[in-house]
Image 1 (cartoon, one colour):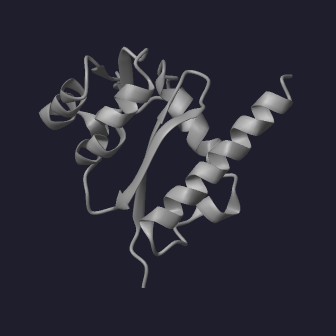
Image 2 (cartoon, helix red, strand yellow):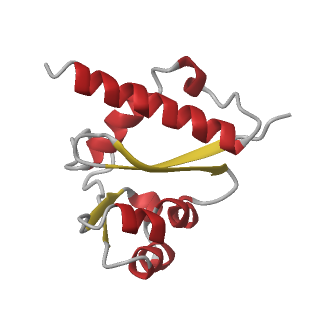
Image 3 (cartoon, helix red, strand yellow):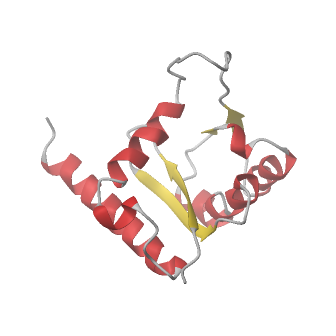
Length: 138
């Protein structure tokens, strides 16, 4: 039986994938931030100054992870009112990218038994997304 996996992604303002990680669902979001925001990602993207995240990444552990890998600042985007709909600035970029990636049938559910295979299909879906954006600039 395959375990449920959790995906963490780091995207730019266009919604293109910068870094991704897949791990078991028993790990909290704030602990999973260390897999995405690491020294390797910092070396590849030194121009990033601020990371916008949802409330799942709130806490000192995620902030320490970002601070240890460079001078990144994690800004938590929170809802003001609990029972009303409002478009939150910057948070919709990641949600939109997740919706685009979930259009691939293989990523709609957790079919993979190995996390590395799930990560490979996540990267393939993002490559497909990037190619469509580059080839159809409309």
